[in-house]
View 1 (cartoon, rainbow, N blue to C red):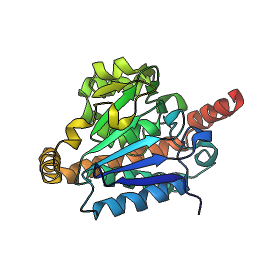
View 2 (view 1 turned 135 degrees about the vertical axis):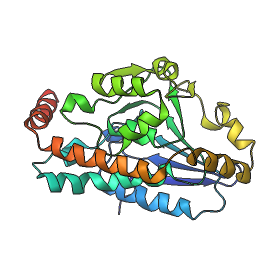
View 3 (view 1 turned 45 degrees about the vertical axis):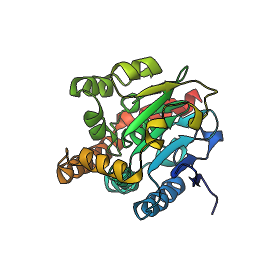
Length: 254
């Protein structure tokens, strides 16, 4: 099986980096990639050495979302639900990981790529890049649970408006609404940027403690139910004429 993600563990820093590795597709997520993410995150749930997980993209993008060439098919509502569920499970596993997680958003992110970032505890964005919850432009909603998570990451009103507006925003705008915690430049190397230095300076016991405090803020069962409801709602929108027309227009533009 082709490696569509790369998983690297740094013994020097006790950090695991997951790199989405489809640069020719702007790291758009395919079903095979999602399967590999499942496996990688399952292993991290049983890893006693990693104290921080970083997710980034290969090449010039973080993640362009779901691969529309694979996910746009003429599906029934139950088929759409079955298609959406696996990535929701990835987001849930990532959200509930016992150590801090960082989305190192080294280039553009769209749609499902933003949902993936929302499942991480912290987000660092690249100056000059842009980011958007653009699902609304395709006649659907967030479909992996990332909309639910967005409401937990920023002010409710800002989350609601962003999902409705479905626009693309610059790095400084993500800082302003507190979706992102820091900005780095194109040439910044992760280890030398200073943005993850606070994590490197803490031991694993401390980071696990703070992550557990963070998770204790939530009714996790209710959070999971809300994510499940989001996926089901999206599955109904997936079979709508508005979605079919939007996808057709997308491919016609290409």
